[in-house]
Image (cartoon, rainbow, N blue to C red; front, side):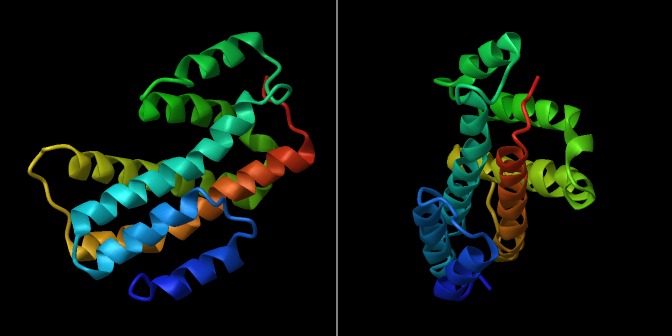
Length: 171
């Protein structure tokens, strides 16, 4: 439960072995903000943790031999120094969708909901909270986002581990 940050992080680490050290500080900050009732700040920090998690997939795709198609490599590199998270995500998701039939059944079944759906919800809330829109986020909304985040995070890691272990190349 997000009301117990230490156990939340401990349980995430148990669920996802080797969770990236860049994700954890933002997630810890998010949980501390949530505890103090700073839900706008909490949603921004959760969005950053979500982006850091997604960047694991993106950066894997950018590595030297993981993408064999020069056009795809060029499109990935186009986003490398841009602040266009939505465009970057859409490109990566489309490429993963093309090879999803090679994933095990469980990953295929959760990819749309846990990767695309949860990522989009968290990103949209972060954008609403991080820009002067006047929109707020409630305690209950943040509780739901925090409860969904581990499923999103685990899905990213499962896809990434599959790609690494199967030596799947993106065409």
